[in-house]
Image (cartoon, rainbow, N blue to C red; front, side, top):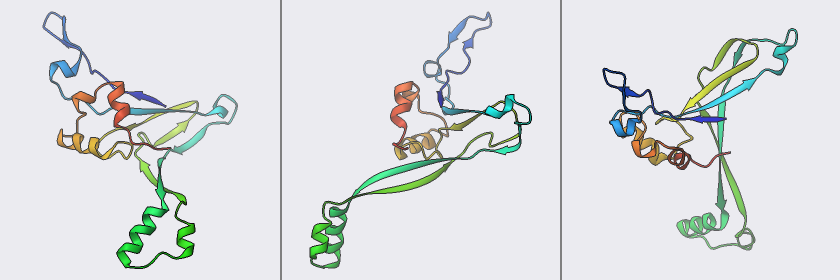
Length: 163
């Protein structure tokens, strides 16, 4: 997996001299970064290993730790129910909540997958990989990436924790 963010093409004057090569400094809008995936067909270099009409989809798994004691105490206070012995034994039980989200992969189809296939996922306001706060910032910015996050550290900190 490769993360690509770009500085776009350099702004040049009429003599071809670079004025700004950084959209943050020039005040231009910044496209959202993309995560690139390269898939290799190991059978592609041997006879009859090509794949016709291939399709690719992606999912991300979010796993959240849930402490059962908090949920039990909250439920029992809301319902006005006293804790039973069984509930007391389960107080320190930790469980995990898993949620699956589809991610948009482009191009999602390949008519003749012979050797390799490069696809990407755009980190935009619809991407489940980004923290909700960042998705809102992109939406408020007209669908463009926030200037202050246009670096490797900013992009990594914008990602939600996933598997």
